[in-house]
Length: 213
Image 1 (tube, rainbow, N blue to C red):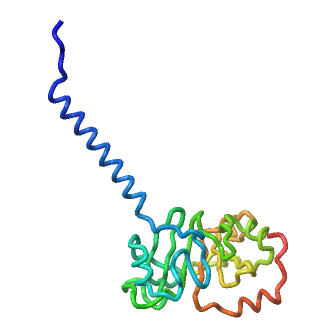
Image 2 (image 1 turned 90 degrees about the vertical axis):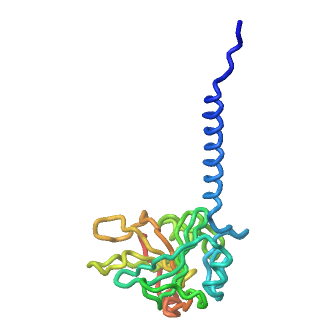
């Protein structure tokens, strides 16, 4: 019986298929690596350090620490400013310069004056992961200041502060049609200005925990 050899064209197709598979694998691996490295202590947001970034350092220093990022926007409803957005595994962190308008470039020679963070990997200053809901935030830290959404196009949406970390502001998704945040209200993100407002410390000192939240 005469042996049947594969067609030369078959070898070409097989080679091309294997080459495409290798390229696809390499592409996925490259894309998976296009995030900033997570520090050993995790993605903690605190007044001194955010993830691996010292808050006193310039934005250019942060960009040299992690080359994977792009321009980002800080939106405070009614005004916007520019910043630099850093991707991490499970989180996105924005270093904003609120003195810069959205149509201007960031100043690499200057530090960020406000930070925001969102994602399942964000940790609070005590090292614990950021809670998912307002109820979880209250269960863990008890003493909260909660602000409803208000009305009108310029409303910032419901927000909360845990008096253990009064310099952190948590943005919430309202869980009813009136924009009021109940215990199941989802925490969307956390923000932290570097120039901490001592008024929140005073409010926390003289306020009581809000029942029912």
